[in-house]
Picture 1 (tube, rainbow, N blue to C red):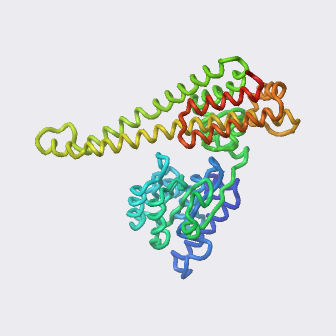
Picture 2: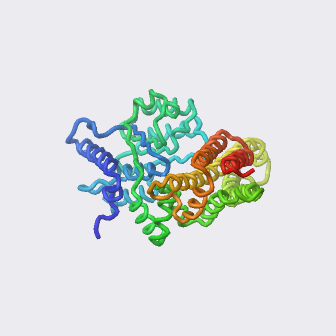
Picture 3: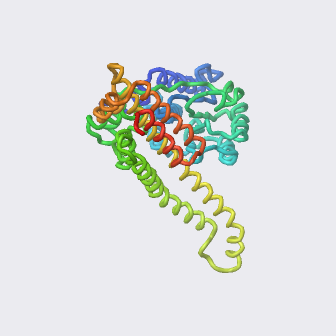
Length: 406
Ligand SMILES: [Zn+2]
């Protein structure tokens, strides 16, 4: 079948997103060909893509970039030309994709971004800058962005991806200078076919992952392909049952937190070592002689900076894993509540249907609401850097009370 990987097809599941980015790309073509004197109202230099976590904001941004850079004369985002191919492989020279590893985006990467933004594109019509987690700008970084957005270079498009445009996340000035596009959750069927195509999942596994992840594409992908993620989900969901067995729940939560630490460590160790080796190579470590010694004296600060960055990344990974696990747990209590009130809805965790039924039989409706509330509180605590053990044990204490376990 021809044309399967076109932008139009890739975004078929979210028609508003598809139509908006294709209209924008088409408008720029008329301008570039000299048929229009202005870019036209369909296009803007600065965009904010928002949508719930996992809805595919960055996927939408990449599709937009492909449509802009595509060289096919008739179909923007043809999926076949070199530019399309490179954009989708996330390796296009004129597309800068910034994925912050830290909890906040500081001034330094945004200064670098500014330098990049003013460069002329080399092989494509545009310089496209995609910034993920753009709600994490520090005020200084937001100022730096605002300067580019207020006077954008003629050939530059900036796409910022964020969960929302809450005033807390974006300064009103920055918001008012950007075009806003909402990226909704894709359908279950869309995610299922994506997981079958991309990960080779069976349709049964793909459907479970799509439902259990609440249509969060990234999590669904991990659930079908990452054994660690499967283990984290099973461990946290089992906690709901452990609560009824005296101190088992606390033992299980301690074991769970240890597992998360271990998984973060194995994910980070190699990456950290590679970055350190690269920095040392760049600094000329391993060489001999006076010159080398002088370089080494000045480099201690840079190594320290890197180590600080790596520590922050581990911390963020750890908290992200915990938050996702707690979202899973909340899903189970929600399922139980739905069962308790007799609502005929799709369960979040169909494979834990029995647990949800057990909970619905054992715990009162207000008790289940209280359980959900306890999970929400724990997520809040983790997001403001409360020690995970304290946050989770506090949650378990409340859940035990709500479940009538003393
Ligand atoms: Zn193309």
